Amino acid sequence: MRLTILHTNDIHGRVEGLARVATLVERIREETPHRVMYVDAGDVEETTTRLSNLTKGVAMHRLLSAAGCEVSVVGNAAWLRYGPQVIADQARAASYPLLLANLEPIDGVQATVLLDGVGFVGVTDPFYDFLESGVYGIEVSDEIEAVRRAARELRAAGAELVVCLSHLGYAVDLESYPSALDPQLAAAVQGEVDLIIGAHTHHLLPEGERIGSVTVAQAGCFAEHLGRVDVIDGEIRAAVIEVGEDVPQHPAVLAAAVSAEAELDASLDEVLADLAEPLDAQWVAEMLRERMHAEVGLATSAVVLDQALPPGPLRRRDLWEVCHSTANPAVVELTGAQLAHMIERGNDAQFRQTTDNPLRGKPRGPLHVAGLGEVEAERTYVVAATDYELERYGRLVEDDWQLSIRYDFPTIIREAIEERLAAGSESATPTR
Image (cartoon, rainbow, N blue to C red):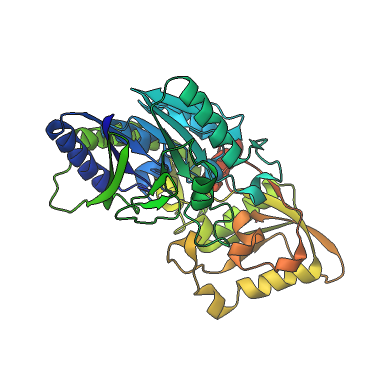
């Protein structure tokens, strides 16, 4: 067998980078006499990229299709934030199969695919701590067993080469990536899988790594490199190609982006409400309190809105351009002491200026509180907020609180705002 497999991973919404990758893929296909496949190992989506965020990642699969991708594995960038139902929407937009062998039931995916004698199986980080709560109703299969079973089936179906598209991550940071399994996976699939094309941890492996008989490749992130694996008569060689700014952007990808933007613009021009008062973070705190039937509402400024929206006609575009958050409404019971701790910390002047990964460098700003007078330390409160305020990464709660949080999945903040505007009065303003 003579074959070249080109691969990307963790593009995360870089449209220009993907357009350059597409040019390189086309060039290599034209100059190579044997079969060239282009595959992706997941997370082409990105919440901080406008086109990706506002289409919940769907548009990025149209662009990846235009780039000539032939198969991809489901990453984690979209379904964790928007809910697994978005994968079916992405699959309808993609010209290639989306692989996922270790999570079910999820519409729009398949465990494996056989292309010209090459069998592919895809697995992704299942985020065990999150899914064990049952919020999405997804069952998790053991990743290694899923890959081994799929590999045997692919061999039986005639696969000469078996490739695992793994969005599990390279095992270097087990705290951040508790199921980062690529080297362990490679050790467990000797004689069954030939090549693992990895992702998730953004590792750049210039020549790949060899673990027994299995080659592990990964091409960094952000479309800055294109991975290349050459298979020649059973020998597998991995390399990476730098995607420089001197590489022209492929017109097909740029045209797909323009088309997706035009379709998006049509829906963004709809007027959602005529605001009598500004729609700000305090408004959102009250909206969350009402939505979740709570006594108290909390909202971190930078999480819910980049800036307040003024009175007057509100278009969907106006809302979506200041509300990028993928946070989910949530409700929990807190003691008065816990609630007071969160409010005091959230409004500490120095703490307001801090930031973290979900905020992409923005200072968090004040913590807005709705529906609360003086806090009674000994009583219990029903409190609405988002996952940001109630999970550890928001740094407002303590690890030992062991909160029992109920989420309004898969609704995200801007959807909750739209629903409140649609159901509200002419002013669409919750009682403050």
